[in-house]
Length: 256
Image (cartoon, rainbow, N blue to C red):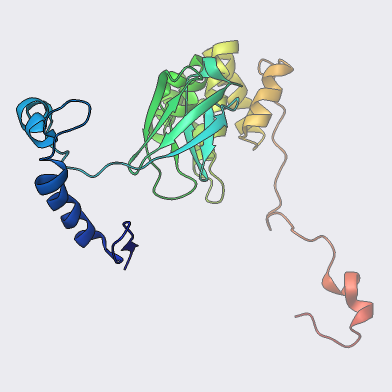
């Protein structure tokens, strides 16, 4: 238990010390005449100051941690392993972060409040206000698999098929690539994008890189050659047999 020391007194607990000080204020210090005001402090408090006091807050005081952090070019500061956005106009500047129990606030060097976020519960969380980001970054932030596919359907069947193939990847999240493919329409138009996707599908390579290469080389209007005939046995992963590669190391071993 924490002990408290007052001059001339034995160590006591915090509760006992608070009780003793309260009694001392009411019976001793509060009743004697003050040397400057020439009035009893307890009477002055009751007559003037007590009516000005506000109620004690219902919640305990929120102890905070303060830090100086630089706003990176992705519009985030990093604190305790999590990411908090701030207006893009402040990129490169040093901001003051106040991390309370439940919220995080960001201030400029003039202590102007520029952002408020919930505090992360675990490292790696990211908190973003859309209006903090440059306008050209917003489509990628707000894009979902559903609206990505809907936008592709609106362009045409070939674009819809390419985006569907990207989103169906069972290993990697291809949503960013699908979104980037759709943004090509703002540069070349939906007609060229649809033709490029149709050409990519014809040659069996529905990828963002292939569609962009077709558009960059203006190949989407050229006639497609017949697609190469695939093997009836399907693609061969390894052309050489195990015996040809390492058979000399394992003489007499059957590979079947």
